[in-house]
Length: 192
Image (tube, rainbow, N blue to C red; front, side, top):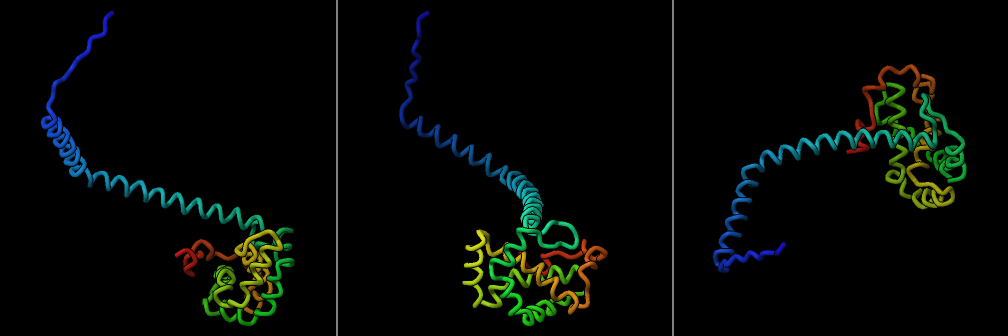
């Protein structure tokens, strides 16, 4: 079988006009459908955002479970106790306990769950409230092979166990607290 060559003889001006018309037509189609495309993208992003938040919450539970198993009330496991004792955070909490209690009380805790969340929040903000402890936290994270957030979470459980009675709660109240579904860290602005 012989190959046949087909040759188109088109001048440059005609080719240029055809290309410009093609792109203008394509742009018109896109422009007309941009609202539909934008709505589809918005819907997809909205769904992605919800799934990402759900995944983020699940990852936080897994991260916290490494330090304190996710049963109520949470207590430090062996890893959490190592972080508490070897990072130096226990001494920091003991030294600043009165100020920390005052910061927690400012959150208007009305239930054991509110108090637990407020304590976690206050401890997560420890470097902001007490900049003088930042180097100690960094050294503690280095010494324990951990990160500052994990050390602060472990210390929040320690602080909770130390001050719950001052807040007129018992740690065992966390098992019976019916307000848990209505409260979360967002109410204290952690993720905003």
